[in-house]
Length: 213
Image 1: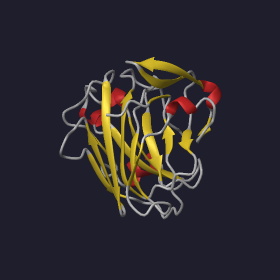
Image 2: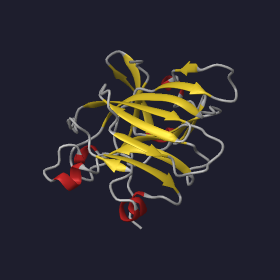
Image 3: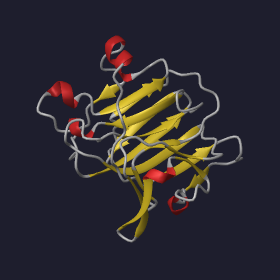
Image 4: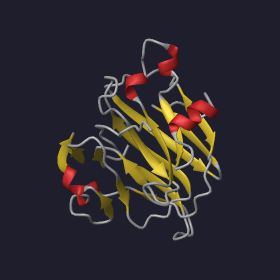
């Protein structure tokens, strides 16, 4: 089965969480400087290095597929915001995204982007710009075949696939809304397909920056 690998990106992450550990909503700005040391994070730290992005800490990865996640964060409802930079060349390690409702690396929901499709020449490719999946059952292949056009959409106006992309993902009850570059209208609205219980935040990205937008 064909899989898609997450590619080179730089991300700013801001979480607003309502979860079992907190009585009220709480804003979290993950400390990305701690990622290489594994403090509060889990994942493939050997592939990451600290870099500077406009005076702020950032992480850059040197391999095509990485998973980093916050340890001990029970995210159930709220908002995740981040900035990402992918690549517009087709299949050139250009996937960026975030996973929620995570049981493990095989069972989770995710929203991710294909920057090489943002301004593709044909409308069909553009319609695959932003994607929701729910692994292991609902892969992008299965969704595209059985529920075409429902869980992936174009982005209007279409961003530059080589430029920074600001993303806001709102998770409420069983609905996920994805807003891009400050738009008031969501690019994607879906009802989640999983019944996953415990929820953590996994960042399927190849670079991270903790500049708070």
